[in-house]
Length: 383
Image (cartoon, rainbow, N blue to C red; front, side):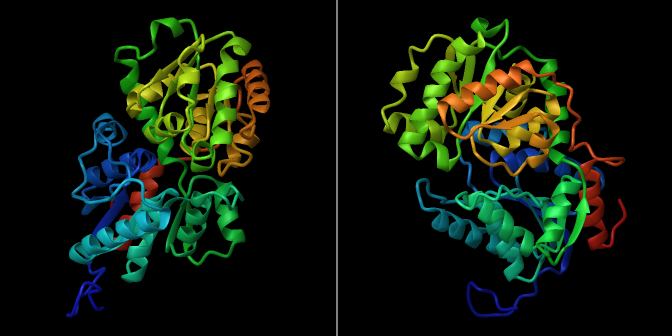
């Protein structure tokens, strides 16, 4: 195959090793158990960081919390504030160079961020095998960049690692070309790992919330990049402490803080009784905060799943979700971005029993073992 960087011939996909592409908080979390298992099973591998999340508290701390080494490669010069297409193109170019150099037989991507689309496209164009961890998810909301990514990645993957039977059926209904393997959730594994570590450490709960609290996480483009929508979400946040009878803790995603400041909304939150704005947290600290919350309001797919696993009532500030299993289980309620709807949904979820079954646990071997078994089999190795 011709090297796209210039003249000459290279052979790609020839070395019996696995490439893991990551670069966002959810990607680091979902791949932590896989990376530990690759190490335990002595499967040759390396990791590539796309640079999509580049701040210390959104990135490095997660590797430390989850006890995994920093990636072997990191794509540099990824500029903040560029368009979706430009960001994806820069990551694709950098990842492709690494893949040409290392020539792995299979490339694993996980989730729906631009990082994963870039990694999958780079591998596909080079003729390498692509494995998609967390395949088969659909929100049916075509406004979301993440939905475009999910569909494209699934349809160019050779192996689709689905978290549930529901995800498998979704992929089958679309006629994907690749093999589908139901694994359960690697996020569930990472969550249990972090919770065990969190329970042995100091509490991260502010004194004012010691008797109970709710949690807020908001960062999706369709929510925080629109001033009117974000103002409505802030209205719900201001009202919730009084309605629920306990305080709210809101770790602010860097993107959200920038938009709150840009739209002149940050000041309106500073004097709300029962609301405490926090800096972003590492996975261990956030897991402990989530595990003890009375309710969580979020637009994050990962937090929806984590809340379901931890039996924490969840209200999703979106009209749709890719994690439909959480809604079917009774763990999650879709409220959209309207303040009244969010407040009503929170009151309803707090009042209901937390007796739902975890739809992501799977049976038998852990999700990371299943993923690594398949990858090792492709390399011709036993685990």
